[in-house]
Length: 167
Image (cartoon, rainbow, N blue to C red; front, side, top):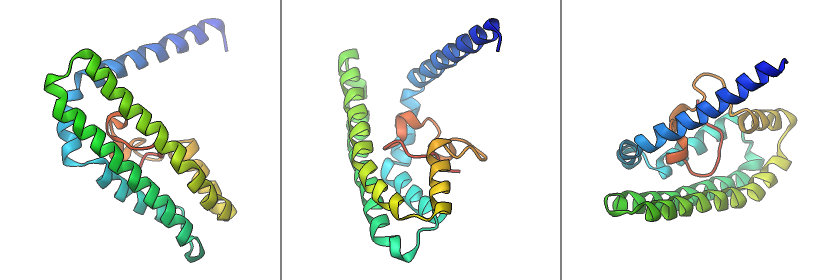
């Protein structure tokens, strides 16, 4: 790759990141309404079912899967509470309040991933090679078949733990 191409790609990536940030800041009021229609818990329930089906969870894995599903649902409840609190206070928040609220959501997101990881690792250890391959594809590549973000459009504002996008 030529140096000019590298500079172009780097500049393009920065431009895309800035544009994404601008869109997220401008669309925040719209996202608040969307979050009320379909909360983290609703999306988590759909995601749990989809992952169960796509990972072809065997009967012997159901107990481990149940722990994964429960963790995902618990994380979604936490995110719903924080998101709703942010929505409820949105009109009265100062810029500092907004940053603090976003920080709380970000910390909860990170904690959700930390909580989910060991539970999913236990399930992953019990998976067959084809199941592991499917899980790896779902997580590593975001499962880019079809609509990359699926039901999680604007996912940074609406998602719970960093799970692969749905189709």
